[in-house]
Image (tube, rainbow, N blue to C red; front, side, top):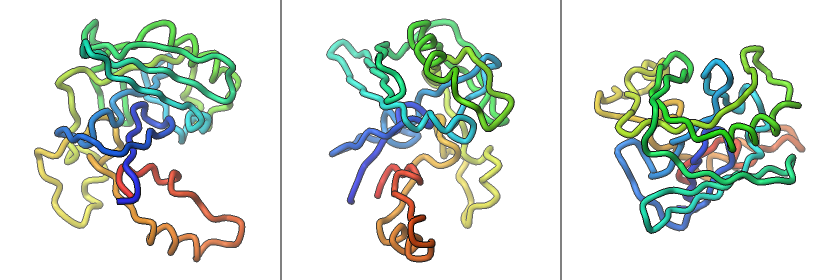
Length: 201
């Protein structure tokens, strides 16, 4: 194994790990949170590419909470917040899926809205203010319900689940595959591994 990665916030930067723990829908801490817009639509890099520049620092505390710090090269300030474990449930929308989620608070919302207000979304549907949410405890999405399930070369089991990943619990790639791809691309147009956002390399 050349690398282990989790993406605590969907579409933000990865955290590289030396070791990882597993849960029922992949690596612990992977894609548990997402940014939503004013209409509660989950925003991804496809809509606002600047999300890729948001760095995430995660720390599990001794009292069972998770502290997050977000930063970006486009903002001189950082923002700290604790991942909620309870609170009012709200419904957010990831593509066609309706997901129950918990809001992460006003501080991170204000930071995200300031950071992204000057960005030009590739999708007209994105509109501020932006908020951070985390998938509600006990919530999960069945892989078999995804529009990508029929495209698999094997049957997707009914018990396979994900949090906020697009489809699979684990995303796996290899350096050999990347090297083969880059040999086919024009000189100067090679792509890095993080373009594919893998969990395991």
